[in-house]
Amino acid sequence: MIAVGRLKAGPEAALYAHYAARLRPPPEVTEIPEARGSAAEVRRREGTALLAALPADGVAVALDLGGEAPDSEAFAAMLTRWEEAGRTPCFLIGGAEGLDPSVLARADRRIALGPMTWPHFLVRGMLAEQLYRAQAIRQNHPYHRAWRP
Image (spheres, rainbow, N blue to C red):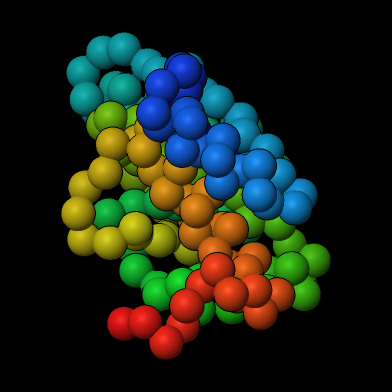
């Protein structure tokens, strides 16, 4: 994960830690400082920093409200395809102002965690949970109950 902002102790950090600890291997997180200025300037500065931190060979996955919203099984299948292709997904999480158009243009994939807007610090925990759920799906672990709607 490459994310804007430093996650401080609190419920968001606890949620992230809870699921990250279950993942093998645990996810790496690169934190980008929050920028200051107008909304457009903040997005531009944070976008530049996010792209600078992105490994050249990584699959850039922007978490964006305008992206597709795959179900958990489809998300697990995406991760499998990337793994089989030898590519590592790098999840890009913007700050309070969202992602700059340059980040969205560079993204190999845009994914939404549903149609609602979520605080950027909460997104880390939600993504970690979905990564854990995808791991469980791929390993036929009962954590994911596919029979439930």
